[in-house]
Length: 294
Image (tube, rainbow, N blue to C red; front, side, top):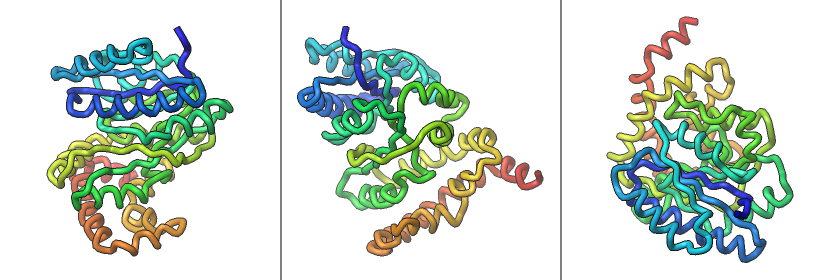
C-alpha cells in the first residue's frame, strides 16, 4: 500500500445531503494533483454513528474509486467533533493534515498549492485557508462578505498543519464543542509559523437567518468551556471584545476600504452581532460575573 502525503479528515453525523459533494471536490483536486506530481492524499471519514445514508453514500463513492479505493477510510467514533478529529488524525497515515467539515468543498488548485508550497519542501508551517460562502441570495452574499474579513485573524483557525505539530499541541480539547478550533490554533501558533493559502474552501452553510440563529444559540452556551480553559489569554479580548468584533476586524490592515464599499452589509452584520452578543451574554452570564469578581 502506498503511503499518502496528505491526510484529509472529515467529521460526519447524518450528512447525507453534503458528503458526496465534499468527496467529489476532494477527489477532483487530488486527481489533478496526482497528474502533476505523482503524489496523492487519503481521506478519512470519522462518522459519529449516522442514522441516515452518510455511510452508504461514502462506501458507494469508495467503490467507484477502483484501484484508489484504499485512499478512503471510514471510521465510526464519537461523541463530538473534537474527539472525532483527534481520532481521525491519530489514524492518519500522512505527515500533513487538512481537516474539513462535511458541508465544505475545496477549490480545484488547493491541494496542488499545499503540496508544492508545504508538503514537498517539508515545511513546518500551519496554514489558514480562506473560507467562501457560495450562493446568490442576499443571505449568502452577506455571510460571504462578513467571512472575508476574518481570514487569518484571531477569529479564524488554521486547517492545515504537520501532524507532529498537532500532536505536540495536544490535539483538539475534547470537552469543547465551540471554540475548540481557536484553542488549537493558539497552541499551534506557539509551536510554528503560519501562512495563508490562495486556494479556498467553500462552506455550504444552511441558508437563512433562522438556521443561523439556531446555530449561534447552540454554540453560545458551549463557549463557556473555551472561556474557562482560555482564562488569562490576551486574545480573548479580541475574540469576544466589542471593539475588535465590531470595528477592528473590519478596519485593520487597510480592510476599511473593502468595508465601506457595502455599508448596508455592515449594518446588517452589526445587527447580527448584537443578537449573537445577547445570546452569548445570557448563556454565559455566570462565568462573566465570576471573572469580573476576580
